[in-house]
Length: 455
Image (cartoon, rainbow, N blue to C red; front, top):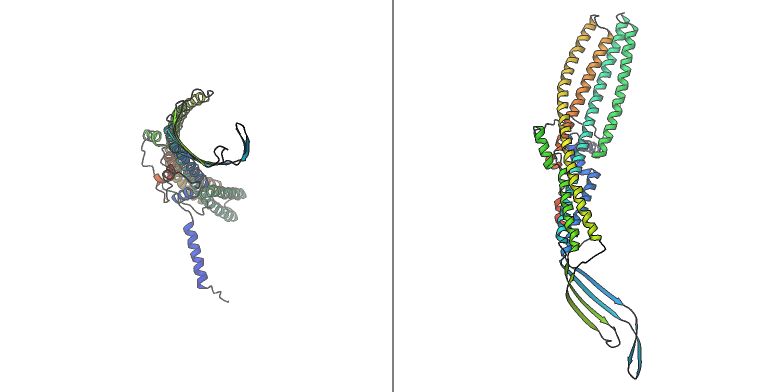
């Protein structure tokens, strides 16, 4: 037989590619959440939205800065100069001028102060929204990961059960040949095997579906995942969890800052009813302006301008009333958010308590089912148990194992839900191995930016 020789370079490249693929394969929950934090487009969209809100601070800061306008004009003018008995002088002129105007606000009824504070509050509210979106993404990613773990483990149990039932069928057929069992026993074993095959096929489909959901959030399909070992050290009681949630949850903080922004908006709107003071400086140079002054003309002025609003059709009063109602709205939304967080904490805590108790019960159930299955098998060998009894015991053992897998899934998910409900399910709190996105850096960059249209 001829030997096929593979060049060393080709073999080395293949091994390198395989090792690289293995390294890139996501296997742990921490890796999955880190990948979602970096790649997920919905979270990146929320970051872009926050950067857009940051620009409101720069826009508000512009109220302190001067406005500079350059103007230029050119035209045609026909002028007639009547000078007593002298015949009139009629000429067509081409007037031209250039100028610059600088307006520096001095006082605008505290509108700039209030608008800067309102913009800062809006940014902080949006930062809370971003953190909430981050928590939602990480929780969804964890749920998808745990769903894959559960589906994978259930599929393994179904495969093992199918193998056991196939052996049971083979054993029943051998015993039928020596007259120990009947055709009915064989049919029962065959029916259970067919049902097991259908359940395994269903488990295959469920695993594929769970992997697809995982890939949508993380960006790649997992090959094999492992059950995470999660613990909840802090908080230790439900009351502690509720206190922390009301104080630290990003949803509550966002609602509080939104209320602060609404209050500052009231001051800003009512400032339109107050006098405004500004300095206006202008310089103009013109040519060919008139028959009497056909040469170049230069002029400059500096004025302090005071504007006192007397009545502006009632629009400012309507805006003020609307702003006050918005404050009421934001306060009610804050109360509602606190109530929702309170409910979420209790729900998550109760789910964790239930899952832990269920795990204890299911572990005992698995142990009992194993003993029962072993006992029925031994009794079947001496003829005191039927094939159906063995099949029923095997099904009860399978059900107990599946229930334990599901309870472990529920416990891990409940731990993460408790963390999310108190605001601790963030990349920073979890210490994920990623470069954290720091929204304050962009805010500091644009706050004092005077010019520029790029991102």
